[in-house]
Length: 318
Ligand code: GLV
Ligand code: GLV
Image (cartoon, rainbow, N blue to C red; front, side, top):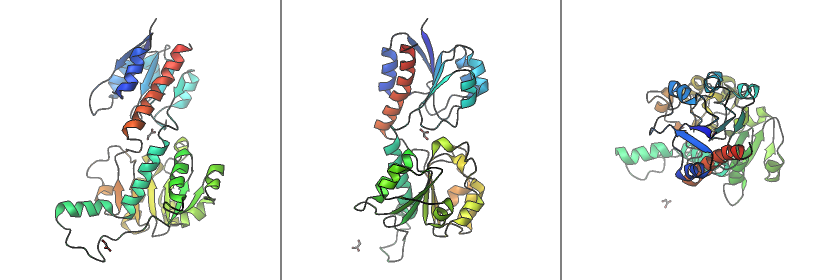
């Protein structure tokens, strides 16, 4: 019998073509521009499938697994993060999980550095001034921010993406930053770059910070709350490019308002999209990107192909 696959979103054409060209796979594509598959539709279309290729916007929980039924053998997500998937429920039902590490590391590190620059140098406010006519004249004191080069950067976790960020920042001819990192494990790669492994307390007392470790999200839900912000210097800029869940957003709003920290750059929020009337969007010292860490054309093609290959490998070897 053909392998029945549900694909929950239109993915890059190269990846769909691979699927079409693999004998023995038939796929059902949920193909509506700009919308994630609604949960009811997801349950309905999951019925009887052998595999599903999902996005980080799709909750794969016990309910979906049950709706799919006993044929379901593999779930492949087009993301490096899998906090939207109930991994324990999958393993209880002997269902394989595929994800897309490595291929998005460099692109996401680029985005993270962009977030640091945009936040530290008030780029968003500056661009608004150009558009809304409040750009007066060149002014020695106007729109001045902090330097990213030569600054101290703290990376909590320092996994694949954190290390790629460190590489960009640490190189002397590039930003020449002093890079500290903390986390459960010392990382040889980071040490080789001259990054210093320090306690989290020491890291928090330093100036800036990137939080990066997708695998740890479950453990770190609400990790960055009032206490952590209070440990940071008032000149610190907080960067988050992992998951919005890692932050107590109300505490962040408060810390940005009362000057506990100087700024925040976020590629991820809770929820996504962030409602346009959310307090974070009214703070001049906060920059929000719409979860575009891995959003370059080549990287999204690579991620989609990897997600598809995870399915194809399973089908060919079954
Ligand atoms: C992006 O956030 C991903 O998990 O791939
Ligand atoms: C800036 O444009 C300068 O000339 O200093």
